[in-house]
Image (cartoon, rainbow, N blue to C red; front, side):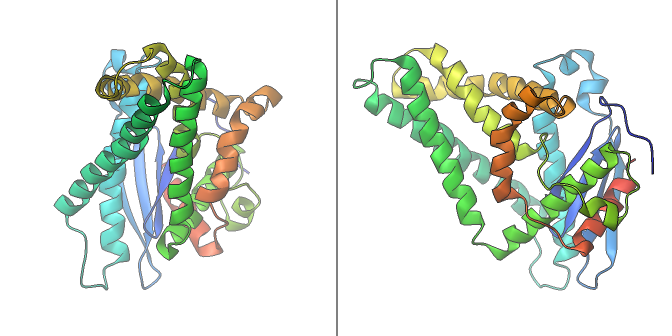
Length: 289
């Protein structure tokens, strides 16, 4: 058995195609299972912007910076995993294709999670007197769209495998945080649902946005869309701090209550992994700790 890390010593990662990317301190590593079953690695040293520039590490600022930073890094490792996992196929994703997909995905997200709810808001605001109730109803529309999207992904075989790797990432992080030796048997005992998960972060973004957007009053459709886009960094920054807090103090009952909605949502975005997938997550983790 190893030593339990300090609560401030955070490790995490994300599922990629047939693999897992892990990050701890200044180290990032991805482990991907090739079609011939061999595990291939990509490693790098990276000092986060929040450590290089002190103001970017300030509370409520670091969340937005970390989000965009990890989005870019995640895409780079996703490209690596696609090239490794699909090496026997004729069609491999090119770099520009992946970035175009990212831009299109961001545009689609803005449309469905900002534009559509704002349109709903402007259509019903004449019928609802309470501004708080109005924002809650808009938030329910946004949450409904998100849950519908996640439900559709469950119909896709490839996404279900990604969710299994997502579960293996969480189990491995849990075992490391508990000071356990990183073996398949030890890791299997842990939950696939982790309070610092990106799924929980998205849910907190939706909840916090209801409170923040309530301060906007009743603007017209165009101004509401613009204000919401401008306030996204604020919402992301607050949500990031809540996620860090719930992850650090998850042993307390009140914090567990705050974490419950995000953990419940992870019943969709994580699946029990098989031993081979856990082995990949462990291999990635061992490269960074």
